[in-house]
Image (cartoon, rainbow, N blue to C red):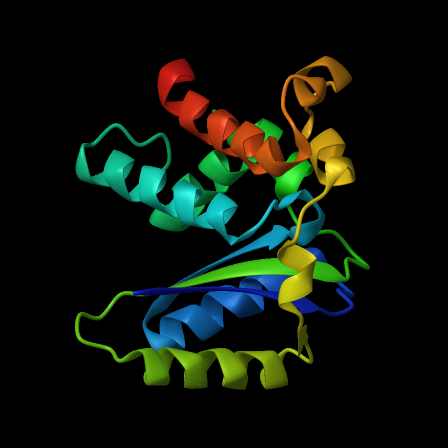
Length: 173
């Protein structure tokens, strides 16, 4: 089971923030990955990245040693962390954040995962805002898509361009 959500908050120190997230995840027996939400084009973006990463881990075609970082690579549409982190990683002062929480215990109920998310938001002084996950043409440009690529589809197909980049990670591996 997984939960995807957006949030707003002020990051004073990105490295410390990530360290505290890892500690929180271990304490609650879940996996957590955080992204700069300004490069996320809808919930399907992260669902696709999660499904691709999970399959890569199962088939032993993964590039990284953890599901969280594999998701990160796919979400960024990149093959290497040295390219993915500057692109999708959080930075000091970041206010739009995207999260995926993955339950690592079989049988956890959705209600329990929702409680963990609520507790997390309070503990990290974040305000839940799923609207930060909504993408637009600026999201596509920040993601690295060219004007020519964007013009090949209608506005209602913009998300497909991102999903295509995620799928391409398997090909470039």
